[in-house]
Image (cartoon, rainbow, N blue to C red):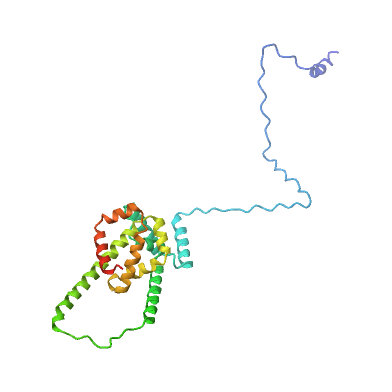
Length: 254
């Protein structure tokens, strides 16, 4: 019996711990890091999933290089999109920030560019030349008699014509500035009208404008100014430019 007791003692369970004694928690199981990931399950038949495209981002040290290349491509594809348009835009912004809206021709140039401006002026000149060619030429049947007593009045007429020419140049500047200070709605309507073609033609060279075109120009300006709001008309009447307007009305008014 003594020989069998050790074997029986080895199979007996351990006695329970005494009450009040807390055993330490066992350590967590160690995960085997060498276990490879399981392959994804096979897809059902008839279903194909396209691989998502991979995107690569290349960091550039200078972002302005990309902008410059895009700017050059834009100018090559569109010749009208040049540095001149950008300069006109910045010039218009500068005038707004300083409180100077600019003249009517300045605002038209900022909006549509000088190339279109010149094309319209050239077209207007061709139209005027065609009208002059159609008009009949009046010839005098008998030449006027020349008298020495009339030489002095002729000189006075020449001085008067020179003065009126200088006043007409000043008159155009006054009107150009006045219309340029009008609201955008008024400016857009005037630019879209047929009157603006005459305005551009006279603005190309006011001093070289014929008396007939000056009369037509004054009649047109008188009609356009009549459509201004009452507050703008009152401001113009009280301004120094109104005296020049009255002087031109006495010469070229109907």
